[in-house]
Image (tube, rainbow, N blue to C red):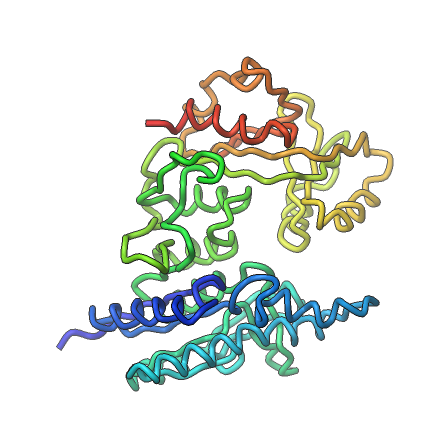
Length: 393
């Protein structure tokens, strides 16, 4: 008798925001079980800011009175949205004849460090999940959360943490694949809102997807991609609302030499005389404060960038270098061309944007990425020009 395979399905907030959409979730779970899989699912909080049980709506209960916000309190409230979602989805699965059990991150055996609001998973005990799977049940796990083993305190994994929860569970359960369900059909070569004709990739390498995610492609969180790479587990990004195949992220080679364009903006950008921070400090700033960085290939200047809502963190970063600060510029877009071949990206005309009247203030070229810093008012035009040159087929 064939041993049932395991599939982990992660559903984002838009996928569980209404009854009709939750029925789509039920369809995906049912179909996977019919195909011989044992299924575990991970869910985000329902909806987006303004919806009654969305994470930011719940956090507004803390924010509205002002004052200092303790991160432990933040995590307790943050965790509630996913717990509600897990309980509701488990209930609805049972109502439709599919045995299920809702679990908090703690009940699922997810243990983290004590870095509230940006915790890292240290260990997952798979025994509880495997017991439910072996009993024919669907564990419905609240995403983006875990627990500090010795204290029992809830922790959360930062924005996009439900993606990380899903992939981490897939790795520890030795699942065949992790499906990240969202409201788009996969990973697009460029933002369809800017380039309506941009199509979706069939597959992409972990390294290229990591660069896409780090530099603005919001379809999956970079920590989740890194977890997948470390555990060598395929991830499929696909739509909740269709049965179409999505984009597979794996160790296979990229589909094309240049796979896509990612964008961050508008950004507040700090210019330092040189890279006095070093790679380790810069990586920590990106991970913990979402402050991005690059070294301009012409001047050697270090550029630190953050969206306007993270300007306080950028200001704090500004205090450390002191006299090395040259200037701060606002309303810049960081546009990154992602691909596998340095020669293909490098040998193209680097003055392409300039010839089209778009000033490139700074740029960085790595083996899988070419990032241009341009004025945000030129963002859409720059993306279209790059798309036509590198990706249009």
